[in-house]
Image (cartoon, rainbow, N blue to C red; front, side, top):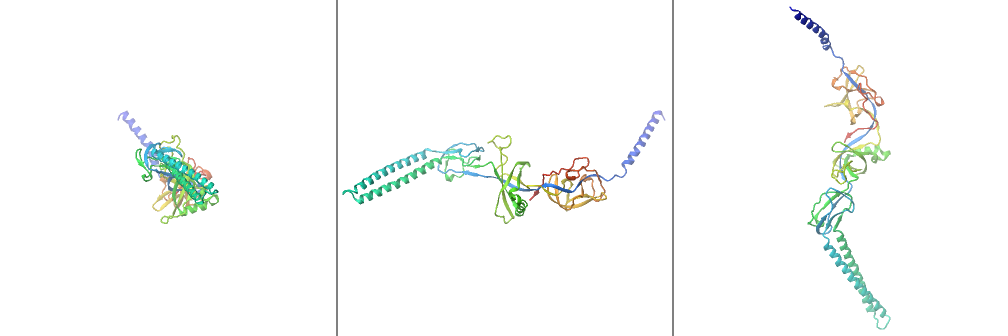
Length: 407
């Protein structure tokens, strides 16, 4: 055997001896898994109920021609915002102007006849005091004068009607808002039977209408009775993109009729709809809310309430419902069935199943087995004494934190 071979055998033997303790350590029994815990305690929660609603414009007008004629002008851009009184359409004017002139002439003619009848009546009245005067002549002159006065009133009414019809050839915006596309183009004959020319919907503020169970409506009213009832509830919106709409609204109307098939009532809230930040007014998408849009309505309580709350991360679910792992006196993970109230990240309220002061596992649940020992790691106290995961910050439990319940 050579010297080189001898050195290799010695090195191999030393390497084997060095690995032996490591292999023994890896094959030894593992200790209980380390977990993070949270103390169950009351938290300040702002209650939030969630519903599906639809945006509606506060004002909506369908423009209709009130006289019949050829459409000669369209003076707006489809999709733009218009102001009250803005001229939108014009109908051919000359026929209506000619009619006004004819009715003006008729008024002048009848007025001249009335003046002549008045002069004749004056003469007959003067002659009545002389032997040449007759009562019958005065009576005839009086009747003629009164008939001409009545004809003057009729002629003036006809003139006013013609002037009104001439005014109807200019179709202006009765409200401020966004105007849709035109349904009739220039050159067509329009009139009262032509249907809607275009539609204007107001933009700011907007309504949001949503159904709510009658029981929930009564609970809201009673809960905030001392603060104005349902009018004290804050209304927020979640847009279809999931974004929370920043402006808040308030309830201004509750339908007095309950739907017999669903036992719900319709609630209406008013909410601002300002221009989208950075958007150019009058351009598509310049405002966040649009008439007919579906949104999620969040009814937020006027003030926070105190209730037992735990991190949502601590809640597990199976076919039987929700449960958590409670750390027992012997550090065993004991499953406990619970009933949840409202929930929204990062907290979930608990109505039954837990008591104040109990310790639950909120971190490392993937390593936990039912009724097996665990190693609760030191927790960092959170607000109000709540524990959090080891080595990290306390679980957030802000006094104004929101929670959500789907209705």
